[in-house]
Length: 366
Image (cartoon, rainbow, N blue to C red; front, side, top):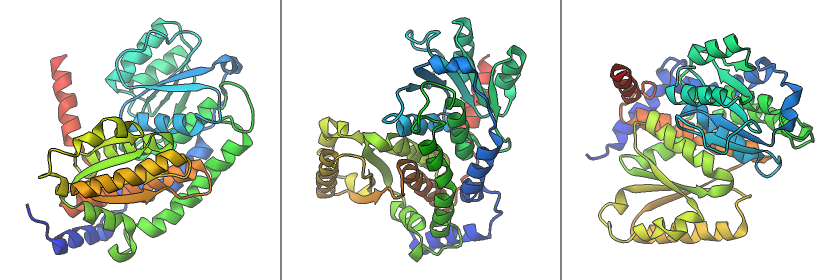
């Protein structure tokens, strides 16, 4: 397949004529959704939650990524462990000393429902974030604390609501101080995000032409290539995971990835024997000022190694006044880029037909 730049540009530019309720419209609306969630997610955690020093969040896909971002963002300021479980069962160590949170946008995610019920059988304190479904019904019936999300969105587009709701829920867990989820420092960071997202829309939005739009340009650079996402483990591991998920769902494109410094201890050697495919790779190297001096050196050296192997490499840096806005700056770039990449190749970014097909086959098997 050959790339026709004129054809790709036409497809990307055509997005500006589409219904603002499409996937691009949902991405552009992230700032408003964030502000609405901060107002709507009124929640009073039980006082007994203060004793918890560990939290397990069960979720899948778009419902789980908000927990990943929350866990990384809070990991070096809040002495409570957050582990995300993407499976039907819970680890053996999870017990009554751990708060269990089920996060399922639809409320019908079978893996999350399974873990939720297991947590109930273990006698754990539980909480729920959902729009309803079986999970919402069971939580209401059992009197479990819950936060209800606004409905009508693809789960991946509900990231701002899920994130803000998780932080609101965590505000009742563990010790109280300025850096805790309900503390002044943390709340200031949360309140600063909508302005960042609005500013990014003026840079990445549909009305901004390719020559002045880094997200559109990045999508065209990826072209028909194979996206590979590398990032520093801290603090960008969940951001890289979000990119891979969004490229899959919005662009219908398989993307691989790894984290540094671990990548330097194994995968880097893989860039030796498949020289024919390296020119088709599009490597995105993420960076953040909190990654550490040694990791920064590793990123620079790794980029040069991959370029020497024939790969095309782009280095993208997080920007913002604090860690959360920096993480969101790169998440936003990935969201826009994935939609533009799908559109460039004539794909509708919204449907997820293969996920729907898989779910129907699983239902038939029951």
